[in-house]
Image (cartoon, rainbow, N blue to C red; front, top):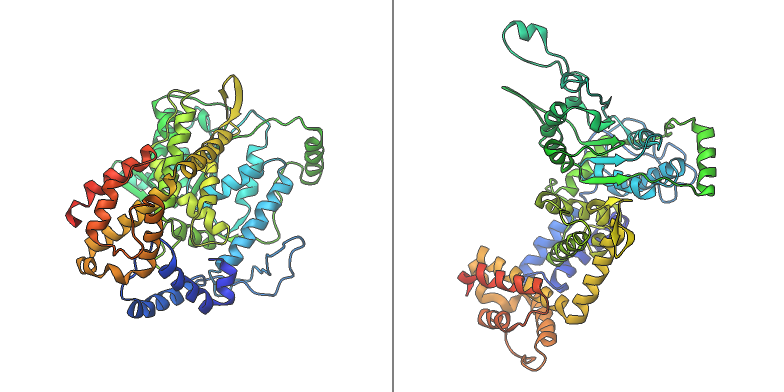
Length: 498
């Protein structure tokens, strides 16, 4: 659903949402008359959920900033805050365009950085010296207001105290080891770590729990850290057991490439003449509380507003990711995507949908997933030709969809996933076993898929029952290995339903 349509006509949007629950394949709806009232009420609540009470309000007191198409009018007047999702997203897009105009040739890296902040993940920027890594990070952080920033340039001589604060002398006299954390990384929302791999292994190891668990642990001293997102920069990679563990905490990675294009260099000259290499302050910033609110929605922490990921999208996300990893290993035999990172891709998908004005993820979001899965501007050798990780991913995406369409695997996967939804509903509420016919929207969808998968066997007027569904699963001849695994999983996990 589009944010602005929802704000303009909440009741119409709520009605459409209810209709989609009944009509769209994959939803399991019983007792329609009774359920409609409940779903209408829930949809109305969700439609009002884009604006919640807090401390900052968007008003019409300020003039519209030139070039801010669709942005609306902002003011930095601190009144009573309204969490306005459409306006925040518009303003975030405007800032991304503004940064791109000042940091030339970095559009995808800027998008990646904003996704890291929306998903509360960390980002690593790699390049040779003098490639404006700090300049870019400062521009990104300058997007936000009412935010605490910690910045440090690493060196071999540093100790953990440089990051977590010095020891508290008074507590030390009492025999307790405590840190004065005021102004330290522990209190910061956004963190900039320059020359990251110049830090010692001791420092990097101590940063692990802060970056990952958001906790500072020093013996009996355990402090919750406010760290939301860290952007680290480096001129080189230093690989060992410690750095490999730290690197896995950086979901987003980019290499800043050299660019000898004469026109690009002309644009850089102009921007440098204006900014002298320093990030300019925008006239208006986004309160960081708005980003925290969006981040909670994206990470499924908001009880009222959800961004839906259909099971089919989950399934294809994993299929395409596995295909990408397999293709990468043809050139880099030890290429690896951790289960933790693969699971976190769901947060990227929700962020991609919400940044596009939707509350439901679709395959376009999966197509954009290279931003989280790949190291941007990293190249590998494929058939004696250099190819970027992004291109390897997009090839894997396209080839998978073509193959699944040509073999009928898409219809098979949709059918099995719909049946899984029915089985899960029945497991949670056994009374629904005998009321399958009430799920009219889903049954019509299943019948359509059955006719495609078993064109000569299934009769139009045949009633769908649990034995019918079980037999159809058993008789289904998987077109691809992933559908076979899905079929076997269903038969194994839902034996109690049969």
